[in-house]
Length: 276
Figure (cartoon, one colour):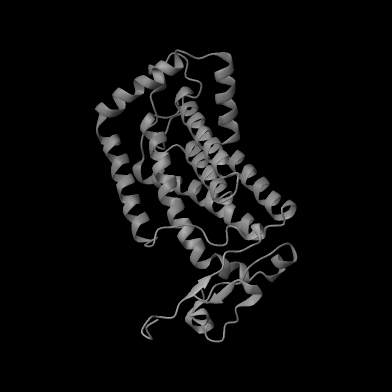
């Protein structure tokens, strides 16, 4: 091999599944692309807000759904309303975090899972504030179960949380036999939650579509941020190693002042140049 070939450091794939989420897939330009995507989502939301013909057309779907309500569908929709509310979402995240941390003994997965799902969910509040989209007019519907008012229709918080939680679950199950089943269940969850939000008269179709876009943008940034700084943050919490495996930061993740003399501990790093 030519002597001009640069020496690189790579991370060996962790054998311990309890640290599967130590590094997450993300775009190479994990700041630029999410920023560009966020701008597109905001433009999409503002277009819908300031073109009344769009909301006038799509509210008919909400009207149709409210005219075809039944006991079972109503029970499911109201259960989703409670479970994926802000308080319910916090409880779900807390239970997931404690399960991964204390039962599965996976501090890396616990923090990374909660970070991805929580960041995606919280991001929707920023877009709600910027777009400030009025809620659907409940007076147009026969039996609106939730005739909400306000300027926070776009995107749907319930749907954004469903997408974010499903995405975190898919990342947790990545490259396992559960990957495909969880992806399918996550997709089904998102569809059911999205339809339920229109069924109760709380959101437009474009609100739930926007939720998917918002979650995708937010999670791509969250994964890049975690992959760059996550292990560095956990390295400052040595007590976590008493619970489960926590790999040290890679040399690429360390700040310049700590790269010199860094020891590749526990076999998590290998210098590819030694094998060349």
